Every structure is written in structure tokens, then in C-alpha cells.
Amino acid sequence: MTAPRSSGVLLVTGATGKVGRTFVDRMLADPRFDGFRIRALCHKRTLAPHPRVETVHGSIRQRDDVRRAVEGATHVLHLATSKETPDEVMDVAVKGMFWLLEACRASPALRQFLLVGGDAAVGHFHYAHPVPVVETQPHSAYPGCYALSKVLEEVMLQQYQVQYGLNGCCLRAPWIMEKDDFRYTLSFGEDVFGGPRWHELVGPERAREYVRNGAVPVMLDPEGRPVQRNFVHVDDLVDALLLAVDAPRARQQLLHVCMDEPVDYGALAAYLARTRGLPAVPVPTVYRSTWLDNSKAKFLLGWRPRYDMARLVESAWSYQRAPDDPRVVWYPG
Image (tube, rainbow, N blue to C red):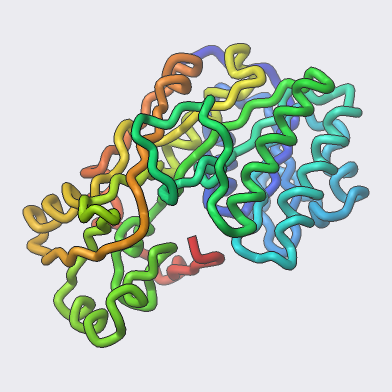
């Protein structure tokens, strides 16, 4: 077993979200982090009581709330974000991160700042990438305020590392899956998780037929080829985050944390036809294949993803929700 890490107080923003909940539970259960306490900056929701968890109520938009949350923290894990919500995205994703970085820069206790970024910062599957995308790929946000905010977050962290020597690390993740998320990314119904919204691409009548027969979409690029799209399971992402805490080789690094290979929608349809007898529907789109390269995270952290396409499918299709665990989509994707 790996030796225990040093003690500390780790502040988590976005602690009640998909990644935050999993990270908190895993850190509390991991003997390596027995010396750590967790502090959560919560706005509307809150974490369950735990002797090693402290909740600070406030808004990341407010400088005094952020300063109060950062005070005495040795580590910050920044997960709070905003999706395609123009009215709040700059306050949450940009100003909120600025207040965090300013408080961290001034704190004598702060040892490390961890950010979970997104592949929206390099265009996701909106632009053609003829070779695997590595961390030196220039930023290229696709249209919309969310992708722009992910670029700005990464650039702000990088500049604080340059300007002030901040010990930061950005783990750039693609679309993060948990529970039955992946199954609902393939739904032709209104219950589709994220995008594309397949029922809008094929029309309501055909969508209803596809829902009835359990069909799954095969996303095609403009040349008619199945698209390859990147995913990561939340457990794999949290594995990487825990490895990055206090890791000397993570200092001031940007790391791709994703599955070894993107999901090929053609191969996915073939797998679902073979294992579950589901019919496939080709859906022409404007999207392009992207292959994120995760070699750097493997090399520097010793991290290995546990999920491939088959495991992602099997975990999503076998997941059974308890009565007190309804499917709730807090945001589109």
C-alpha cells in the first residue's frame, strides 16, 4: 500500500457535483489521506455531515466568501463551473476562479491548486484533428460561453504559475460519466443526457419510433464516417486527482485524463447489437473525431484508466437506481 500523504485541509468547490461527491467519498475512505480534512464551499446544496468535513456556505462570486473558504487551506480542488448560461458564466467561472487564485496567492498555508479543466478548451469534437491531441495543442474554444470559460480558466491558472510560482495542476477531462449517464447519451427521447439531442436531428416522428425499438445513434462526421469521441468515467478521473495531490511531478502541469481510446460510435453500435440486440441508426452531423492523448498523465502520475468502451457500456446498462436516487440532470451535459 502507498505510504500515507502529509496532512492538510483540502478545499473543494463544486463539492456536491458529480466529481466532487465521488472525490470527497474516496478521499475520506482512503487511508493515505487520513490526515486530511475536507472543507466544502457550498452555495445551494450541501454535503452530508462527517467528522472530517467542514462546510463553508457562500458564493464563489463573492470575494469575502472565497477568502473565508481559502483561509488555512493547504490545497484547493476547483470543480465549480457553469455551463451554457451567459448570465452567470463569467461570474462563476472567471471571476470566481480569479478570487480563488488571488486568495491562494496570498495564503502562506496553500501548497497546491488543482483544477479540473475540460476538452472544450481545445474544441472537443467541433474541429478536425488529424493527429492525437496533446497538451501543447493551442486553445480553440468552440462557439459558446462554456468553452470560452474553460479556456480562460486554464489560462488564468497558467499565468498565476508564471507570475507567482503557484503550484498548480490542471487535469483536463472530456465528458465525465457516472452511473447510467452513458446509456442516456444515446437516447432518442427527451431524456437524452447532453448533446447532440438526437431527437432534434432526426425529427419527432422518427425519434418516437427509435425510442420504441431501443435504437441507438451512430454519429457520423461530414464524410459519413463514425465519429470518435472522448469520455472518462468519474472513478478514473478521481483516481488521477488523488494521485496528483502533493505529487511533485504534477507541479505546474496540464494533463489529459481520459480513456485510452475515444469511443467509436460505429464500434459502439456493433457492440450493442452483439450484446443486446439493439438496432443502430446512422445520424449525419457536423462533428469530427478527436483523440485525446493521455500519455503524459500516465507517465507523470503513474495513472491508468480502468474503463474502456465495453466497461463503460456494461456499467451504464447494469446500473440500477434506488428509489431515493432518481435521475436528476442539473445541466444539459
